[in-house]
Length: 320
Length: 320
Image (cartoon, rainbow over all chains, first blue to last red):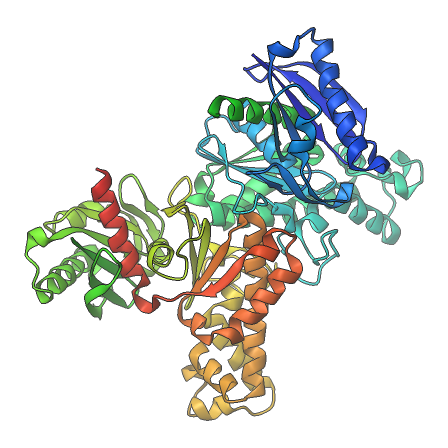
């Protein structure tokens, strides 16, 4: 039977009808009504779910369950989001609110956890004993999947891999700490470092690609310039990879996973990002963990959260 | 029934007869014959085990099993130690070798994992859902216990909490990386920083306590000087606590434990070490993980590894 996956982001909501084999049969994306508060976000989520079900021509009874991937730590017992700064949410009982609006059993989980589950069951993490997932995009988040099941910690907040300090006194992070991995190796940090270099240094293709406007420089644009041979851009990406390598190496030493899956927008840089990370981990983490871990790019793209949320929803229903 | 716990260190072997309630009934400590190679270490371990059993007046049939806590990652399936630099061991099938010398079923596990199990079942970790254990002594190691069971990673090497880089380009660590937590916050690092300060700065009670010989300065001596009001020593301990706080905060963000237990020699510094760590974690780790985690001192002292190894041995026998 089908399940519906929802992925709530700071700017958009993704929804999909997902088959048991992880295939997204129908999908849709709509903007997040950020200004409207909790009720309007919940209304939009419910509409998105009903919308994709209708688009797929499914009756209520043909959908088993709905799963929502949500920013912030989620209490696994209650489905309450304890803290989601992007949405200005604190202690929002999301599962209860969503269940009241949909005709299906609902499950709520952290968005990076959902993406981790998606990759573990249908993507680059298949067959791993212990998989760490990192999403490297505006921020850096993560999830831990062991023998196919999420490890969410004692309060649903595990996997905050972006908030490890690897450079005390370094750049200020959104979380308030200084020198977090996220403040050094995220897409935002990569763009910021490119802009800083442009101000201080030699000319670069980046100026042209950004139409002379530093505000338009993104990590994707830095990646494009690097791919076209721009040396300043290549240096910035190498720096990002080197920070990310330290962060991943620290996690490999702590968790000893057999696979690390890197997703999010920056993973599209492919080998340029991942090869230096692999080399650093091999070289610096003690055997056997450093020797044997595989570090791979995510394969599900933007819908990993939708696929994982649907998987979690189906699993919760089958269990109960 | 009783079990025997063994704890193999770089300088000494501890052995104990352990009751089901975690009480160490009889114990003994003897030097590790480091120069003699694998066979002589194994012979010594077997003698230590037989010795404590005899001392407790136990017949062979009154001991259920023997557990050995061993440095280095241990393959949980085979009981092979893959890598123990202190002992110059690589791929040593310790369980097989020990079983051949003892009349009891044998279990081998990593030493920090054994101490973690001991604390989780009989010490400061009792009742925790997810406990991280850090031993802060010559080096820094760790173990992860979830719902009473060890998480050892995909290759038996999880919990290398000392080998997270938190200061790139910082002091060289034994592992070859620079700026590892171990190279900044271990007992060895604490003593080293005290010696460096003494060379550069004002006089300190430490010089007197060490009889003028910088070689004799240990972390324990720095702690003693700090307790007696020496400001240089207090600063060194505060610095250690601050590094340790960063490392623990990073782990709390990644794992979201409900309890962190700090053991090893440096834990004897008590509140002077732990209070700044607690404050940093509360202040810097996002809620709910940072708010709700308890950070406590280990309670089993030097025999945590013996107790945990005995517990693991008993558990393995009951399962099979």
